[in-house]
Length: 255
Image (tube, rainbow, N blue to C red; front, side):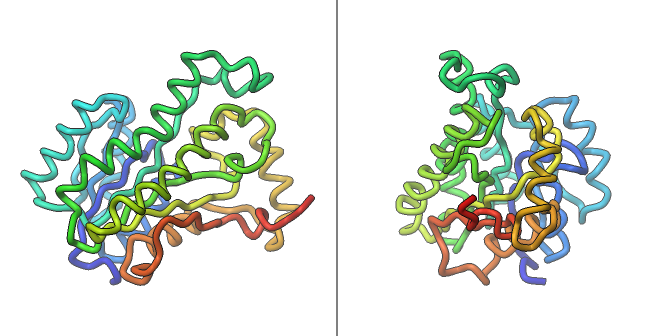
């Protein structure tokens, strides 16, 4: 029960296949109390259906493209809970047309949307959560992917957004470290989720990963969940500003 007595926020649960759901389950098993957010009422229905599997989570709506909604979320958490011991940012989005064809053809508005939701939202939520997390030896974790470092067909602007996200992890780790807050990222291998289904050829990517990764297996949401649970737990108290790969070793390969 590594997280018994700890309360934290998991953002990004869409359905039972979400990586965020795997993380929520791992945290729940470790005794952590959860606050789950959802972007819209439609997605909120899915979260409410899943909630009974957890230990009495709080459910709150928040669209991270709105500074007002982020601040309202943190104000509500402050009044109802009083603090946060961890924050899991599992959010990313790019218009589907920006994940097809040449990256060079990315439209300005699509670029702005991808960077705003997928990278800037971590900065905005971390800053808004600071008063609730400071001096608690708290932890922030976000999700990234190898496409931030290497060209992955059809990942396009999302790869650029993930690169910005990983850089933000390092800058935030430096900013928030004096307040006792650690900031890290988990880079997961390809997993079939609602979000990844927008990436053309995701099934082929998973098949290739299974064939070539040193562990010769696909990654699942429980493996990513346990890694994130480690990063929000006291076991990782000396780790910050890092990207931890949970991809069966695929990232070490040269070809």
